[in-house]
Image (cartoon, rainbow, N blue to C red; front, side, top):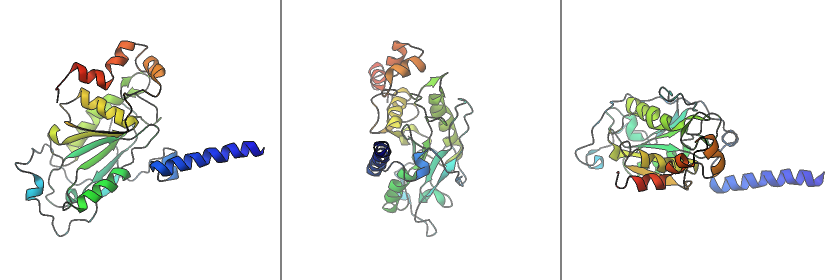
Length: 261
């Protein structure tokens, strides 16, 4: 009986210690995949803004009523094209995006790990620190859900088993961002990023879609989506096709399309 209790205690201690080291789940709800419903109020968007003629920091002057920090919350991004069962996305708006006549700014579309939650707090802390040193300027960030409500490894792909994860990010999320957020409508000012599972997705999407974003931020990313369980992913997501699975790996995509952007 003592041994049984000890196993549970040691397992719980290990989980707490690892989480403390990485800081991935700041709350108990985060550990169990609970996304708080905190709908963000979005300021009016002037979609389709062209890149500025000169760097924004050279012309921007922060107004006196600008907030000291950005705004964080969630937003439902409809899966209009994909039909993917995604959880609400996390949104971060920098201080400069919260004032009247706000400038169009760059945007980061980011994805967390698996298991993981579309939690914007990590990016928000970093971007708030950045904006504090740059008169409130920072990118808008959207933390989108590429693993879905069931928190499975979708391999960032479209599949009958787990839904159309790739189409959700590359079509539905991109379309929503352009329609609802005041961002520069040019892929040179767009970033696709991710952590762990999301990092593997990010480099894959960047390799596949240079027409959508010219910048990639891959943090501790998997070498390719599905690398944690390749045999299962090849069977479940790619119908047992080794050729299709190999073609989905970012190193092979980049090799097939060198200099794509």
